[in-house]
Length: 417
Image (tube, rainbow, N blue to C red; front, side, top):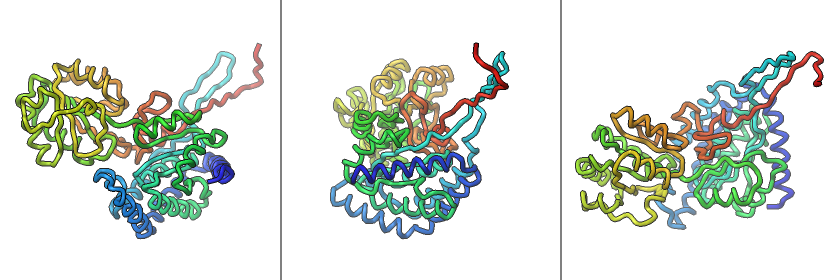
């Protein structure tokens, strides 16, 4: 793809962003609802495109977890449409007074929320990101340039076509949502150099993608690192609750970034707890790998290798480690985690508060499943990703995280001495 074509995409995105920034909340909401309708109208076209992607993926012998992330169904398309309706129902994130400062010289300084501008999203196998990311950017007044993975190319293109049709019906520029129309990897490199047009890049994918993006661009990046999520079962845990939560946290959907990959078990309850957990996870066809202490308790556990506690499996595999106490659990998470989502299961309120306070992750949970690490579950309608960095956005990236601010200064003829 030529640099001229990419520049044209960037320029038209910048032009569309100016229009969106001035569009009313009602206009943006109308567009979201119209797009939800066009997605449902295009269901058969989207599903047909998805079958092309699936057929190509199967020829490459991809994993079951990857195939699950790639696959679209009527239910998932309807969920995309419902997500757009939910985004439309959110409060307007723009023009909010974030602070008002009255100065002694009678200057009035107001900080208000405004769109970021043009956002590029680079993602891999999930075609639903096309609709989720576009919806969040439209609600927050941003234009978006999408670059989906080669595995989901046809699906993402079909979804984007439906989105653009909806934008035109709603009298907003179709170029508010664009997709790089090639699966050529060189297009990603060129996109990362488009600092003239792009304000923020959001990569959604594996560690290799994140590392590549951050190494190759000077554009600010909202990092979405791997989800090596932990569930720590404390010595004061309700074991029946822990069993139910861990099963859900690992197995509800193994291919999402909020799936628990490592279970930390307090040594004081390990003898009682581990056989129950192994029974439950084994029945759910989950492979269990553990340290030597865990294997001594239950021989069905396979030996963990040196990298298992640093791996985002994204499939039906979990690593189990026995820890002496809460302090060792927190230390393990600090060393091996990715600052994504970590949970403690306990009835001890002091232990829970210590864990919530000391674990330095974007999302820290008590007595619930890490699978709730999701913008929709946070009431955001949807999310572009879970940001694990510490600048501007952290945790689920929804409409509010896609705004920045500016200062309005109102005077009455004041001059500075």
